Amino acid sequence: MKLIRSKLLLAAFVAAAASTSALAADKVVIGYSAPALLGGQGQIQAGLLNGAAAKGWEVVTLTSGGDAQKQLNDINDLIAQKVAAIVAVPDDSAGICQAVAAAKEANIPFYTIDRAPSGCQVDMVVLSDNYLAGKQAGEAMAAFLKARHGSVKGKVLEITGNLAQNVAQLRGSGFNDVMKQYPEVEVISKVGDWDASKGVDIVRDVVSAQADLDGIYMHSDCVYSTGTVQTLKELGKDAESGKDGHIFLASVDACLAALELMRENKFDHASNQPIPDFGVLAADYIEKKLKGEEIAPGEVKQDGALWSPARVEKADVGMQLFLSTTPVNSSNMNDERLWGNIEKKNGG
Image 1 (tube, one colour):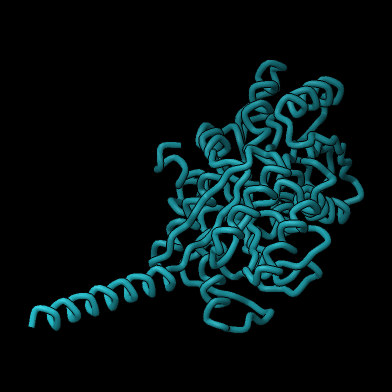
Image 2 (spheres, rainbow, N blue to C red):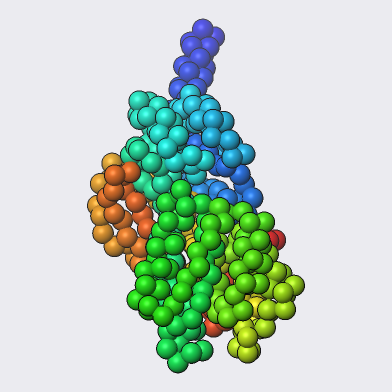
């Protein structure tokens, strides 16, 4: 009897161990490679964590600190851990393709957020519609010029991002495609390279030389808004919105700094990026992939979402989910769904 009881206990132990092993094997772990976890990058990660947690998944996060080679090494580590899928914000759009190839060889789906790869295909890119964002800023600028001059004419400064990057190219083309409709508008375009100090120098030089400047369009208010407003103040060109001599300020992003300046009547337009939703939506599309669902091009809608309607397009880099940006001004700057206001709620 003692021998039989021992065998039964051993069998139960083996069964329990097998069950635990099966549960571990079924657990979905997502690998996430980020340049950093501050500001917008922190909110992207938070969205992915929230989206994964809602599905009972875990996320392993590694940060590169902006070092493209470290990012490749980090992703190789994630591949070695046999994660279910990899999500990355690429440090180098072309360089990330080496990691994409390694993941494909290991049969691990690959997704990028905020930035597309260059020269390879991933399962999905989740990002804002940057062309639309620039277009919205252009339309806001045109409306201001018409109100000031009776027709759309005047002089505008554009401070770009890094024009080697697709994001800056799209934000620029969206804005300038609007401005090109009005031949009496002069656009002075200066390359800012996402560098706040460069932005300050550009504002100081152009505003000092162009006494009749009507407006400034910034490819990113996260980078340029604070320095621009401070420089205008130093130059005595900081008349508030609605006042004589006001220089209209428009941008893409709608970071907390821009929204706070807007609340002080010092900023006019920002095209809001739905940054907090990037990771949530990436998790949704990973789930579809793991379930074997096909992703087709077309419109995507979600009630109450600022990014809706979005669209899925097939491109040379794979499927891309383009999320709508939202024009923000004094009428809706306190909407709690805006990126900057979420940032403020979370401690900014």
